[in-house]
Length: 388
Image: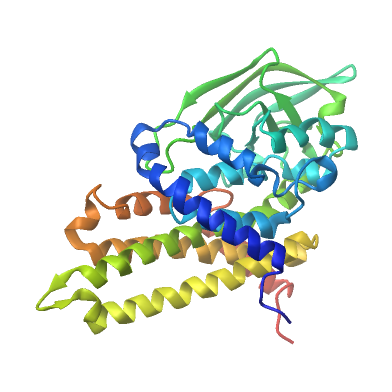
């Protein structure tokens, strides 16, 4: 058993850490205030090969896998969760293609992600179908060799920036809750009937647009079906594999918030000492640091498992644990770190209120905390996670 990163991932970690400190950190507050997409950071990620971390070498990427992407996202999220989301979007919409796409589809849609020629987004949620995925009403109807899709997707990160979308739609009866009634499609932004609807005003993670995608009788060729018709399982496999990547955003945020608060506490004078000299502060720092390390171990193990293809049902508890624990920890650490700064933490002079606002999103996206707890419990009840 070896807990050291292999040399190539340790080198990746060091290089992204330096890049994040020098290029991402100075932009974090401006991105939040202007809510403008950071095109300069996107170009930076492309130039440095970070946009292709999760894409295999045969399609133009570096093949660093989910663990490599999680490590990079952790470093970036120490300063900006919006920038970290940009990296996450290189894997979320491409995941189903990596798992079940044809070779032609992979070359056509994955390679441009690595070169920065294209961006993508993921369309699953709908106004009446968030955690209840099977409540979706977007419909795909067979018409000759094509499919015609109509419906509305919502809460899509990167919706305005994307050139193509991985969309899930009902290919069976709209009111069916059978898993074989849902299928995945690649839908291009420029096709007739595709438009962006309302763009959301968000509490945090600003700069990467979230909003609606409107599909009005969009004609999709059969070649753009991802995997087989009736591929709801593909949706779940894709999301299962994403858990460590979302968790990495939480770990990075927690690390960034605690590091900032500790440095502040070492300088802030109170009662003839620094506040870092008080046992109450020291014990809280120790508690949070321990939990960060626990979250990191859960997440790195889950990423390693996902890279080995271990993201099917029997491995779900391990994957869900890292997402649940790391994202809830991001909320906890940002809360306590803000409190350490007192009134100063509430002001935009410091990044703590930004960390605090950004953290909450992580407990909601790609399966809420409650969904993860349900999946973990089911795994224990089914003995997928058991200790004898």
